[in-house]
Each structure stands twice: as structure tokens, then as C-alpha cells.
Length: 436
Image 1 (cartoon, one colour):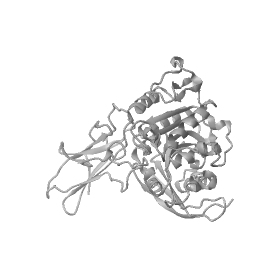
Image 2: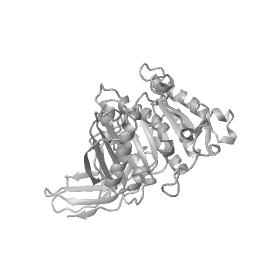
Image 3: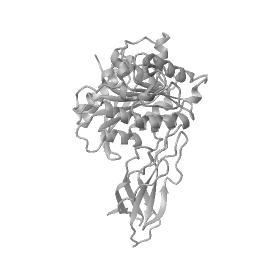
Image 4: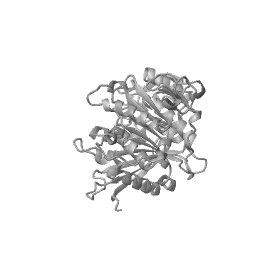
């Protein structure tokens, strides 16, 4: 089988205590191959000797969604999940023009599955992580990305740790004959899944299928004893909103349950008896021995922690966080030619709620907040403002501040504090190291 040619491989660069690698392919005119160009970027946590998995953050259809995929691998919050489990974070970016047929990539049978596998192979070589080629996947997909994930599930079930469907699945189209029905091996019904949609999509002329498709898929898969649940978001429509605050702990739990101790071994099977249960479209979860309804028809949640977060999310569209974030590190101050001081630092996102902003202290007193007013058009206000597609808005903000109020000959001590997504502050960082 002929694969697309690599146009270029970007050199790795340091980013948020890790390295990123990108590979791009030209569109193909060969039948059965991908007709769109595509760029795949992976971020690999610093210091990882052997990757245990790949978290794939797959955008949806249309030019805006595709371009949103450019920043997915640089998302600080998703990077925190990847780092915890020694996983790579991948953000694909399909070069689909707005009016072109999205199914030419979001149906992986049209070439995107082969190109995805090719990218993993090429990125494994570029990053010197050969295990990237064979490591298992967590698949997150929005809209057309959920469509893609649902078909990848039928094709590669043994490689998938868990799936998060945000407002998208191919189940309805293949059930109605609008797309070729795939083979559905028993292994695909062993994968933990969450079908998440916005409550405002219910009855919407354009997006009602995100609701009906999710519910229909749940009923069909649950009849096969699949570990699946549904999570309606009461605050949103087709936008992703604050779904990440449930998606990340869901994947965290599934990675804990399924990753093998030895790299290369098969994924661990799910024990359905250990999960929590909830009625379809309900808002109260129970341990399996206390569930009052028919367990075979109930939604399945991986553990008590996720069940509590799910309960809060389906009621309010958000989740709470009572723990402060980790403190910034590698804080450094450098004098500039004009007399100003450039401050830089590194920080890891709060696992529960991300990063809202940073407080810069000078000589123990607050000097400034970065950003001064965090933006949150499609969810919580964050340091990396979120797009419609659950990806950071470009241009990406830097962990850097220039103090232009310093006078010649003055010496000051700088420290940085992280503020998480719900407003809790970290401990102060160590004093800035002076760099000439």
C-alpha cells in the first residue's frame, strides 16, 4: 500500500517541560488514500523514557475546527494528563476546506486511518520513541472527530484505552445506511466510553443528531454490555464548554484501570462489577450494589471519583476543585539592555481545573496578574483561552513578563504564583534566579 509522502518534519522544540514533533503529508490523488493534507503534532513530556500511550485530541469538521486542531498538542491541561501517565498528546490538523466533504477524513476508511498510523510510525522515529508506533490510544473527538473515533473503534478496538465522544458518532449514519456499516467485533464493546453532548443540541435543527445519536448508541452498546455512559451538558450547545473537567478525570480513571504494567502487553479488561451506575439521562450515580434500577440498562462510570464529577457536571455543566495548583518552577529573571527585567517560568496545570492566571510578585508584593483579565468565551476563563473546539486560542500566551518599571541599578526579588481555574492559589515559587 502506497502511503503519502512526508513534506517536512519540524525540529523538536522545548515547550512546557516537554518536546513537540510535527509531521505533515500532502493530499493524495490515489483512490483509497486521504484527499486532504494533514499535520500531526505530538507533545512528549520531558524525561519520559518509554511512552505508555497516546492521547489523541481530534477536532471536528470545517475549516475553523480544523485550524483549532493546530494548538491541541500545546494545551497545558491535557498535557498534565499526558505527563501523569507518561503518554504523548497528539493534535491532528486536517487541511479540509470549509465546503469540502468532511467524511473524506472523518470516515477513517477513506484514508485517514492509514495516514494516522503512518504518522505514528514517522513520529516514533523522529522522537526516538519507537514505542509511539504501537502504544495504545485514548481517543477524544468533537463532532466529526467523534464520528472518526467511533469508526476507529470498530477497526482497532484492541488499541483503544477509552473514548470520549463530544457531540459526534457515526453510529446513526451506519445504522440508517447513510454510510457503510462496519464490522463490529466484540472487542469494541469492551472499551470504556462517554457520550457527551450539549443539552441545547436537543431539538436543534442542525445538531439534534448529536443528542439522538449519543442516546441511540448508548442503548445499542449497553445491550452488548459495553461500559458506556452519557453526559448531557446543561449549559452548552455544540461547543465543548467545560467538558474537559469531566473528560480528563474520565481518561485518568480509564488509564489507571487499563494500562498494562509492562509496555506492549494487552490492555487490561474492564470489570463492570466495580463501576458505578446511573439511569440513562439521570443525575444520580450509585455503587453497583446500591443501584435501584436494572443494572444491565444503566450507565457505567469507572469509579466513585468520576461518578461524583459526572453528577456535578450533568447538573451544573461544571465540576468543583478544592485543592490548590502546583507552584511555578524554573523562575528566572534577566536584565534587558533597556534596564527592564524579563521574568520567565514554567508551570504545570492544576489537574482538576487548569490554570486561570499567574500572579507576579516583586519584593513580596503583588506587581501584576497575567493575563490581567482571563478570557472564557467558551468555558471557564483561563490562561490559555479555550476555543469552540476545546483547544487553546492562538496566539498561545507565553509564561513570560517584562517589568518595565525597574530603574537602573535597582535590585528586586521576583516570585510567581499560579491561580487555578476556580481561583485557588498555589504556594509561591522560589525566588527568581538571576540570569545575565
